[in-house]
Length: 137
Image (tube, rainbow, N blue to C red):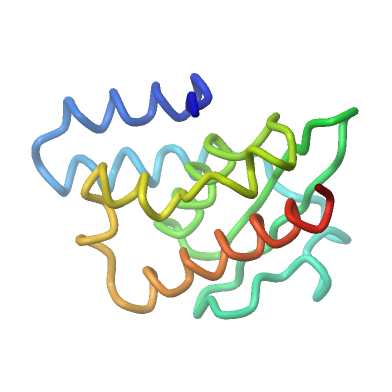
């Protein structure tokens, strides 16, 4: 299954960065580029449970495609949200349900440099997105 260009661009940019400090800075920059959610979107219904940080994910349907937006109160986690948005947004629910973002993070070597808590939060975000997409298939 072909990955969205937005994610391929992120993966390519990460491949040019050998130093993990630079990779973290890039991930933080990705998060800073996310548009903020409206205050009412930072609701309990949109909060991702299983994350130590506060994380909110909002989805909308555009025809057969789902679009995701998100936010976090932690800089690195907000960058992880940006990567997930690049992986999953603008795709049909069936594709989203079948896409394992954890495997993609592992291929990029990103998860091995996350704390256990951040890694667990990433899994919680992916599970939330895929579960929601599965319910719409």
